[in-house]
Figure 1 (cartoon, rainbow, N blue to C red):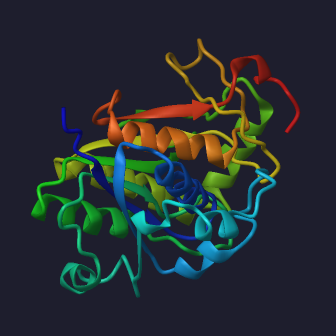
Figure 2 (figure 1 turned 180 degrees about the vertical axis):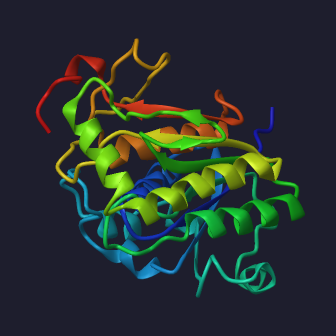
Length: 261
């Protein structure tokens, strides 16, 4: 039996969402289901950084460069993901791609990389041009969009209320960008999953697992999850979808629901 390996496209920007997408690349390198990884970003040089703003304790730049599967990678620096579609299409070639992981935009104040809404519109348009069905995209807990409401985020913790205040004040532009990205995916016609992550602390260490909140207000999650573990979820859902055309909240083990950050 011949197994066809998949070609994955990964988009990342600055911020924690992009960090999760970068970690998905590390997982994909070692995944036998993946034959090729096309990486598109205006921040390609950050893949050489030792610390990807995470608690992994590993030199990820060296890990990437020294991987025996480095040949899988095609890294494509792009000038923009938010310009006119015809301009973005000159740099982003999705020919042969099976699925897309997107970690663009952010929920952090003052980073300013608000590219999620327009970037998602362009990415999904290019996906349709190439007949690509699956998109797994980073989003945030606490978001209210056409996909439904997760407000207040992490409702079992006081920090969720703080995040709600941030979303309506200092981070309102970032929040609106994330909402716009979810709505853009919903309108695109592709088979998407919006991954509404809980806290992505730089100190969170990977444990090799992730959990989904099944029923809001009934189920809890660990409120801080490593970027490496979210990266695994992104890859798993890109290659073998189990959640389709919806948003889910992902976090760590529920036994840590009330653990200190």
